[in-house]
Amino acid sequence: MAVILNLETATTNCSVSVGENGNILALKEDNTPNYSHSEQLHVFIKNALDTVSLSFSDLDAIAVSKGPGSYTGLRIGVSAVKGLCFALDIPLISIATLESMAHQVGTGTSDFIIPVLDARRMEVYSAVFDSNFNQIRETKAEIITENSFSRYAETGKTLLLGPGAQKCHEVLKHTHFDFMNDVIPSAKEMGKLSYLKYQKSDFEDVAYFEPYYLKDFVVQGK
Image 1 (tube, rainbow, N blue to C red):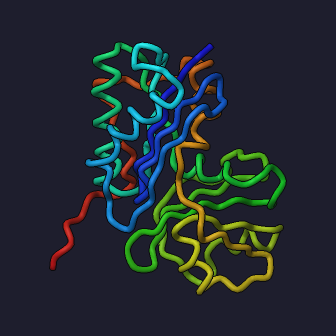
Image 2: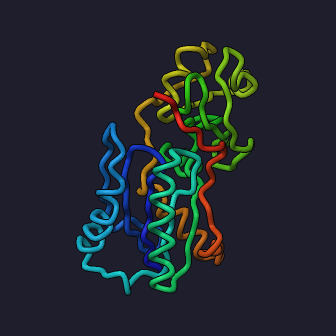
């Protein structure tokens, strides 16, 4: 048996779940326009554990969404999980944010699943998965044009999902494209993924683990 705490802070959704053997026992999350992770994350962790009458000593590992995503959000989540793993002396598991998002749709829903997170202007963070959630193209930052993802749409039904799907919808016109704009990263989908990694002892080095920013942090001028 493995009880795993899952933290998702890559976007505006502050999300925490507690899973046992891949099954979600408790979920606490709040998606607000402004990032509130610094105020809410530790409160949500306590609430989620209290909901199922568990304490930190009952945890076997803690998983965190590693990115890509918001620089600040990722830093908050990773800092929290590293501190807890150090204090509790338990493993740290990282889950790719886009992979977790892909699992919000059912198997066989589309030939290709492309989670897209909004970046600046017409840019998105994206990865491509097949209908069985196998990643078939690397994660990258890219500027959306009318030819983006065309190789997949020409082959089969292609679903774009996530906060970046709206800007894609405005540009991509192939009939094989479908869009789900309301999907956001959540700790709910992390439960099965983190348990699979736990079974394989696929752990991160707590001392040296860093979020997957994908791009350098840029301070925006006023």
